[in-house]
Length: 198
Image 1 (cartoon, rainbow, N blue to C red):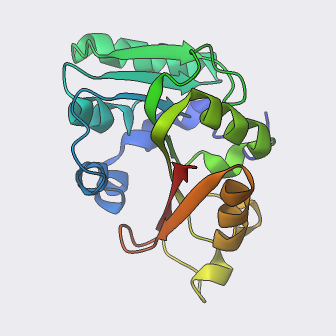
Image 2: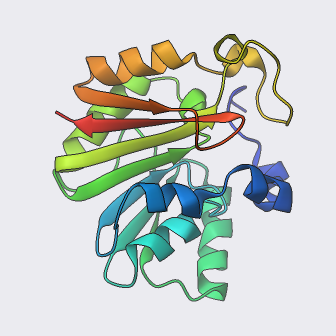
């Protein structure tokens, strides 16, 4: 197994109550404005922790493509979507660097706790730019690096060696043709990076 990638054997941890308290994603989507009717892709969807609130935010007229490279995660998510009768979500088993979606077909791309796992973030950013419409947004939520906080933060998550510095995230997005907005006021132990397609 890739040493930075989440182990599917621990999938139950992705939806525990503590994680929901630490990452109230519905509040983040409210800050992004009215998403009703929009089309979004979610990278690293896992078991649907962010998929379900995103699907609620875009509403029945919107659409979410929930993407994960791990077939076991996609299978778990499909079963969950059937149980919860979510009809505006389509699962996709594919790498973030090569998505089977059309050019300029999305209003947004979301990645929650997956950006640090990617080996070729440059290729993933190019793919996001390809998929986003003119005013589309890339929204990344991931663990803060110790150097950006001045101290160790409570909670689980990857080792500090696998976390990305905020300056590095901003440089990557800027270099790929995004205007970048960094937020640390949404969550305690996580940053939000919003890339607006230039």
